[in-house]
Amino acid sequence: MGPLSARLLMQRGRPKSDRLGKIRSLDLSGLKLLSEHLDPKLLSRLTQLQELDLSNNQLETLPANLGLSHLRILRCANNQLGDVTALCQFPQLEELSLEGNPFLTVTAHWEKFMATRSPEEEAEKAQADFVKSAVRNVRYGPESLSEFTQWRVQMISEALVASGGTQVHETGIPERPSKATAAQEPRARPMALKRSGDVSLSLSPSKRGCPSPPAHVEGSPMGSDGSQPALDLEPLHFLQCHSKNNSPRDLETQLWACAFEPAWEEGQAGATSQTVATCGGEAVCVIDCQTGIVLHKYKAPGEEFFSVAWTALTVVTQAGHKKRWSVLAAAGLRGLVRLLHVRAGFCCGVIRAHKKAIATLCFSPTHETHLFTASYDKRIILWDVGVPNHDYEFQASQLLTLDAASIPLRLCPVASCPEAYLLAGCEGGCCCWDVRLDQPQKRRVCEVEFVFSEGSEAPGRRVDGLAFVNEDVVASKGNSLGTICLWSWSQTWVGRGKQSTLAVVVLARLQWSPTKLAYFSLSTCPDEGIVLCGDEEGNVWVYDVRHILTQQPPLPAAPQAPTQILKWPQPWALGQMVTKTMVNTVVANPTFTYLTALTDSNIVAIWKRP
Image (cartoon, rainbow, N blue to C red; front, side, top):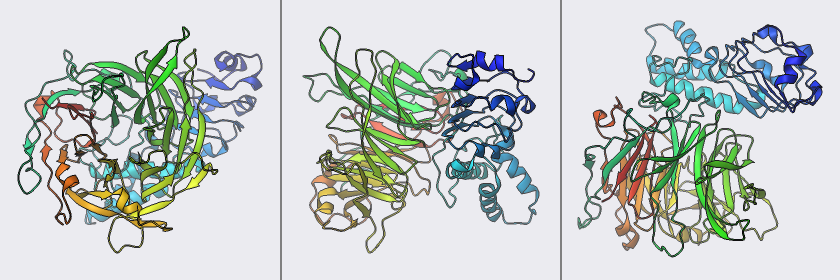
């Protein structure tokens, strides 16, 4: 490919125009472009350009004077970029894709850094110094994205340290280690910017899922009377439905969230669904738990999905008939919420919700069109997604903006009054907002921060697990190592007064893994009194807390043992060499018939209770 021409720009630009100044989107990917082919004089004529795709070329640097002042989206994946500080010339830049540029990775810095260290130097100190050096020196992205890129560099650096500097992708990005480092900052949510290929539906060429021998169960019944035997759970399927390029060898794609579809059919009280949605990499999959078949799969190239949530909408057809739609919301790295019509298999709406990645989202349990989104921009926004029109289009509107002091990680409407209050587990603790829509302020700050340790005057640290066990009892995790806290919302809230910080009334503590790693999400089955959480060894901790919910105080001071621990099956049972894996997320359907666990090694595990 030679130098660019005005004719080529007009051919590949959108909308089609005979004037460069009218082009808003330009695709220059896959042209084998070199840095010298980017003519600033020519490109500066694209005065209205907002989206530019330069991926899959041979660029080593970007000219510093392109003059694209309106550029919002830039894709430079799979080039040879070694320094992207020139991106600071784009003041409006919102989305940036830089995956597949080997000289931008921390690995190169690791090699340089370790070459300067003496063999006698203490390894632990050298590794800690390396992480600090990488954050300080690796040049990656414009100043406007410095907070994200520094955080990203730290995450990669810590993963590389954990692997001993030996595990490197073909693109130069460190592989996710089998067991992440327990460094000063626990495991961070990897916002990996990887280009994934197609996904696989099976662990082997012939089967979608491999039946496994019964999982090894540890733990003793909870309660002093020994009346609660271990729950009967058997492994059913192990799937790789998010694999890159249909490869059964892909043990790297990170899976982040899953949610069971509620049973919406009228007249089926107590009915439950066996359909679960999972997200990870650039794909969202909808799986039938009984058969292990992937019913639907939605892909968004360049996206990294972090969260999914279901709702059901009543729509009126053109013939005037009312119909219930199951709608799945999915969001992640790009700050967009995609509204998926699952049965039809297409995306029928996109909300540009945040300029930074969306960590989690959830629908209101009382308003089917109300959606909360929580972002790395330290904001939670309540949207009314509306009901799709006859053309299957959504028109979303923003109802509230809730400001947080730190990044919100988990959202949880208060079970007894979901229209009034919202809880959020955040990097800086657990917070509560007033979300009543009859109040005049449309932008609000946190009403109360909760304190978990007795005698402490400041809120606790990160809360990365949060869910209601029933209408009053909250399960939370992350404020103290090795335990899950059960506390009373009503008893805590009644003592509020005008306080901005409030000590929670702890009912009991549950024994959990002593790991220092973070972001293992817990979940609950309120109808069954079950609490679930994964860990860094691939285990699923199961707690039957019904006796705690009914027991009169005082409760035992020591943390309560789990009802059982589901151990990860032996590697041969998966048809893969999966010797170590972390279970990030565990979710069960309301009747606790099916349990789905997601791992950091691209495995969806499904258990069933006979």
